[in-house]
Amino acid sequence: MVERERCCGCGACFSACPRQCIEMISDRMGFLYPHINRNNCVNCGVCEIVCPALQKSKTIKEPEAWGGYSNNQNIRKASSSGGIFTLLAQGIIEQGGVVFGAAFTKDNCQVKHICIDNINDLHKLRGSKYVQSSTEKTFTYVKELLEDGIPVMYSGTPCQIEGLNLFLQKEYTNILTVEIICHGVPSPKLFKKYIVFMEEKLGAKIRKVFFRDENEGGGILVMRIETDNGTVYREDKFNDPFFRFFLRNNCLRESCYNCPSRGLHKRADITLSDFWGVENCSPDLADGGGISLVLMHTEKGRHAFNLMRAECIGHAVDFNKAIEGNKAFYESYTRPDERTKLENDIDYLSFEKLFHNYGMSWKGRFKRKVLKLFNKK
Image (tube, rainbow, N blue to C red; front, side, top):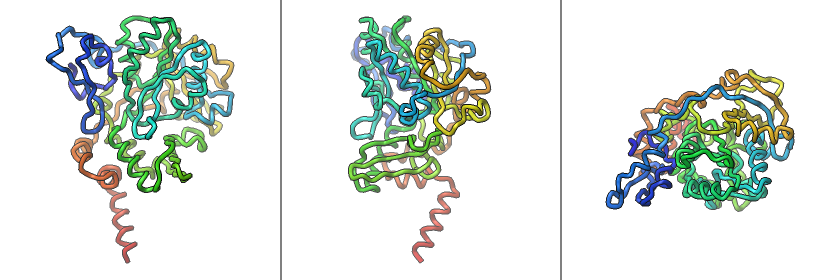
């Protein structure tokens, strides 16, 4: 098996094992890792064949790039960045197909991949979710659908798409794979502690979580939480504690600090992202609303995009200029020294204490101490 620091947790090995002797078990940070029952293992090597960390990604040519958004303002407003994901997904469902993507669980404490076949359920998959999603048994289900000739769209992080394609082991004409440009996946356990903390703070159960408040537009990172009693919490990336952890990069999965899926090493048909820096690359598109950057890597991806092109406003853009604002496309973030300390403390400290120790800069901690002293007087 692959070394722990290289495992992305895609679950391909779990799905592919013919003896079903691999179990995905959470580590201290809540990230899933494969554990093998050696008593049942016959050393067939299938788990290694489907592992994206062990199989070298193919280098591809520069993709065709496009920037823009859905001409349906309701779809655009309900989406994180322009609504192109929704249009692609609608196209698959209208063909009698199904769409897989990340969705919150009912308690909003976890994110898992689910399957939908109804346009009315697309809201479950829309929106950013800055937590690693568990793929569960979706890889196996995808293969069954493909073998039955049913169109499938599968969206996820680049490593999840690589894991899926390696698991499938052959090219299917009836699947569209869509990856996001991934900053890195934060700790599921830290997110769960955040939800519990916020429910205590707001005095009610959380009904909905939005990592990107749809009322802001333009790709601004604003956390919005709605509770059962009608309370609405809103804070931007500078003040929301979970965003502070995320942007300090100290709660990411170990493999994210040296991600092999960045750059022109892709197995997805399409890459979707916020068009960060659109005002520098294509100022005519920067109207204050959400803008999608679409990278088409395969003929299948170009065909799927062209089918819904008439429902969009936008145009082709220069690939190299377009990704200048998307550092995460080609570069991993440096592993902070405090990443190990956070992992050691996550089970023993409250979320508030973890935030004080690891979610704030030394200037922030100093400011908080001064304010506490001032309030005591």
